[in-house]
Amino acid sequence: MGQHSEVCLLGGAVELIDQQGNVLRTVRSPQEDAEIQSRLLEDNPMWHPTVMMRKEIASEAGGYREFCFLFVA
Image (tube, rainbow, N blue to C red; front, side):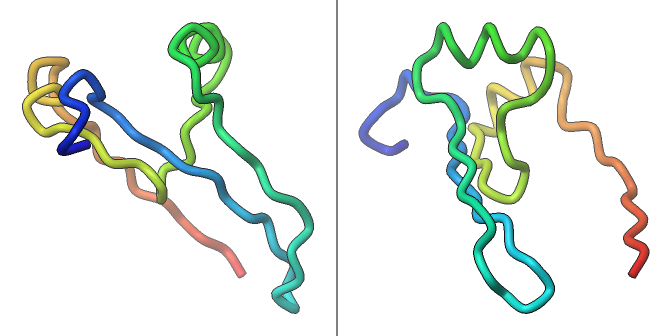
């Protein structure tokens, strides 16, 4: 992101694994702006643990909403 000032949010792929640690599949986020914007109309194509964003852009958009998650084993 240091070399690409036009990028305000960056995300990556994730591997879905089973309880034994076996990779079930790899899920990749869209890479092109048009596809990202299209997907945002239906869901969020970014996997939260992989996201980096520019603080100033998030602040301009109203900030970052924090959610509490409950994980049940």
